[in-house]
Image 1: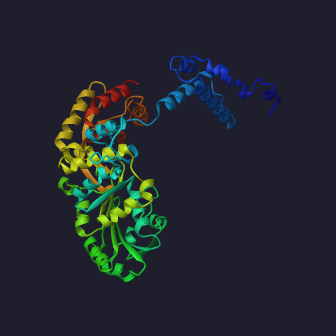
Image 2: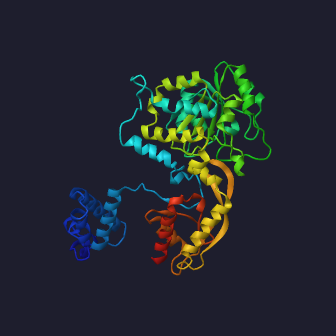
Image 3: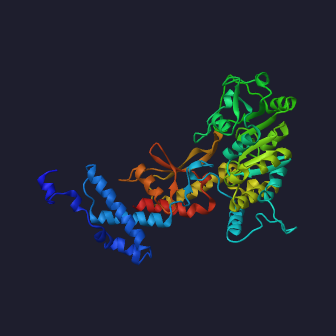
Length: 468
């Protein structure tokens, strides 16, 4: 260290303010006096920002000014005190957007969550008898009736559902899976690893592109417990292929007294082909084909809260209900409330009218065009070059890979002195944040995934971005 730095004249660390001085700035002082935030909390954040400022100097950066540090403290305190999980406007055109919380709930499901959350409920209480009940009683029969199965159960997600099925029925036993289905399906969730962690022993059969019934039968042994089909819900294998049908697998399972489990991944109760999409196997089809246990997600094509549903034979479901993992993986009362209402939409035949995912999928192109044109007109005077253009929406969430729906997009060019990147950043910091996409240096907004009550908030956010 040089003498000039030692004597403090050019010592960058000494150019930083003290904690007391930082706390007495107008911005920071207002957090305690006007914002009614605990002084200890604000002081802690101020100390953290000063520590970071010293680390930045050590890495060769210039010392931060008092004003910039005060601004950083204010921003950090307000972010922490208000929380950073918030509603966003999804204008990206991805219906089941994993990063944006997947499926939005129906208004009725939201209302049920609020009602159950704000007071007491009969979560585990039988009103008829006055005795203790079971929390799964509120959804088990609904799952069974809608799917055509004998019984149903739900846990906290589909990965948990598969894991519990394996742990309950295949511990120290063989699980036969087609080599083309021993896949990773997101978040490093690999079927071979799940089978191993569930206590099973993976036996792969066939090849990546072709697996026949005879391949399964050739490896069945006295230690085999289960045949498992894994639906490739987020990728496609096309070309020179052959897949053993679920009916053929059911025939083998019955012949050798094995359990046939079908992991649908996303899972749906509605035939997607009626909307011009590829046919996604329905839960009802799996049950009818002979699957004894079918696992699927609650927050994808089902359009409900995060959950893993299991439909199947009553004796197997009863064993799952009594398994130790059932308590570890059980649903809370708010998820059960939302799931029950979502299932009731299907039972009543109103899913496509009530559930947002299906409302979006079923929207006609003319409805979307009308909405996009309304947005264009509302912005025409403040955003030069605004237009509409043809585009596509995607399903997302690991469902129907490669499948798209025609849509009409609001298309915005960058503004003078404001690039598309800068505008997208400004929209992400809007309240509520607006998520769109950029193609060929134009900002694109898809009406299909913007909820009907968000139109004005979207337009206000775009107006604000135009004025910055």
